[in-house]
Length: 402
Length: 185
Image (cartoon, rainbow over all chains, first blue to last red; front, side, top):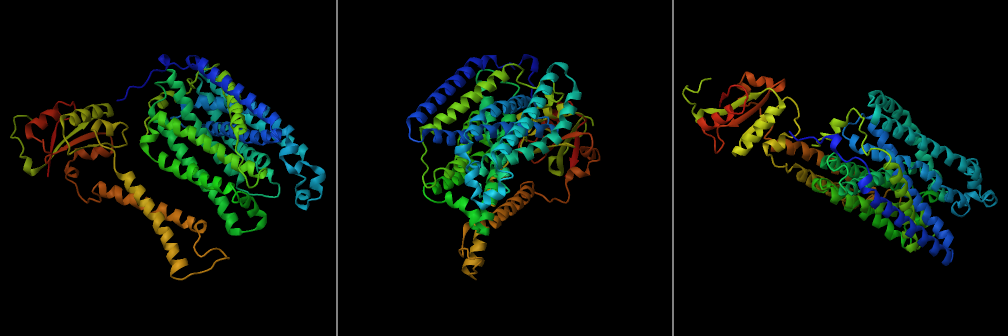
């Protein structure tokens, strides 16, 4: 039989990787923020472009956080044993919901520029926006954002704290408590994530609506999460952390989930597209028309080929999923594709006809990524990287996928 | 069964069967049989045993490639079916859409992909396992019935190229299982 690693001799603290993570995080944040601010203050309409690009990066890292929160609750509600060795990292990612609440402040402050409906006087002359004013108004928008972040923050905090407490108490009752909380938690998550997608992204075009849009953003979230996980694990193992507890079997399963949810993303994206295309009602098709005219048509096609077809052909292979470094590389590529997807959701509203991709978008991404990495590092280093008090730890370490 | 009995004639026999009490014993025994170089042999367990494929040295199945090909065939057939029926044989204009338009064809193509892939998986699995098979010599063994309950078996077929009535029996006896049983062919 395969020998199972002993948890007591495993390096399960972040310390060996800490200097690297802090260094990379701080450097990325500094370069990103400095570059973005410098470009924004020198370019014409620079601050507006910065804000639009910031919304893209903000939505990407919010997606990562929500994907992690979903994963944690999914593992509890299904009573999953295989994922115990990777769950702590997901719990910590989910705790960045508090960071994302802070990072939402620029979006709220920039509401005037980002969301056309927030101009109350202008909206009053638009019969469609008048009808939506009860929901789409600045005050209720801020209240809703507060409620979403409260839900996500409290859920993430509960699962992280309970799991950390189990590290020392080894109390199996805590597992049962988390299992019971996961059901209602997922319901709250589904509602809040759906409405957050409507508010933050769909309302950029307040005339347009798509009831599947929330599911679309949920698909982006889960894909982003499963794309990032292999990269995190590989960079930990590179420094000798978790190098025996997390095996190729866990990578294989993360890869399978990445593959499956990427197909789910394509399924949802096509479902939304086909119904609107078939219905052919101008108030719905105008959203796609914007993305089918000018340069944006190429981005739409690029998403089909590079976000779906190529990753499908790469990730369908068992060999790729069982090579951690190759999977981490594919995951990083998928993150870029998820970013492009969000870029395609946001930017055409401000720049119809031309893609105008620029350095400011890169800096903006780096800035948010750096700050996010630093927050993650500070929280990760405080506890064991494995939910080592979980009664299913042995099962997870001995895990074998078929 | 005593070693001093007349050795069986490999021609009239299916092969040897030996039982083990635990998964650990089975996995160790399977690795020994694998290392001895046998190719026509099998392990029989009441439930899925993780690690058995590696212990037996079984090469990965080609089934995924068949399923992938089946899926692609399904996609192609789905598209061709719609092109032939709606655009070629009997052009039919629906709600002002182009006669042949890919977005409208995706759902059917998708379903055909799933259908062909699933059928290929089922038929391919049966074919690769030489199933259905209505009778098998091992079913003649009374003790073998416990393969569906609480025993783990290894059988080596007499038609294995390196099967030897004496040497193979000695190998099986050294594995620490039950008495070696000869199964009639």
